[in-house]
Length: 112
Image (cartoon, rainbow, N blue to C red; front, side, top):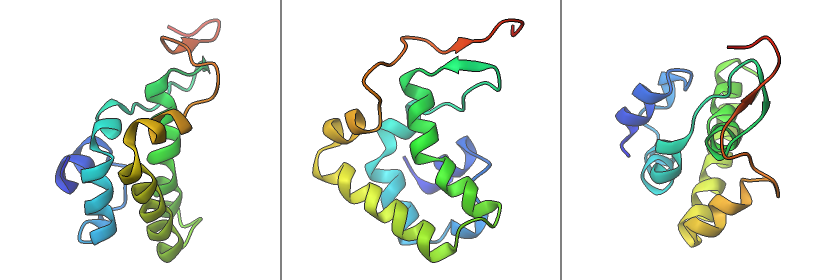
């Protein structure tokens, strides 16, 4: 995945990170997981793997966007994630998931 594809897929990622080498490496190395990542519904009570990928990989970038984390800390965090994924993508993917993962996102009562 390219940075432009990543930014198009997840508009919550701050655009000021576009030229960062750490973001480019993150998009490239974690691309297969990022392609699966999906923001959970507000009504979700049980998450599927795609939701966990979103929460672990995309949310830290969104937190930076809200001004709740520094740019340096955020870039260090995605660099660390990238290195873990580069070492063994399958093991990294498993590390992002809890022991029990739903096959499909489950929404609470009253949610469509």
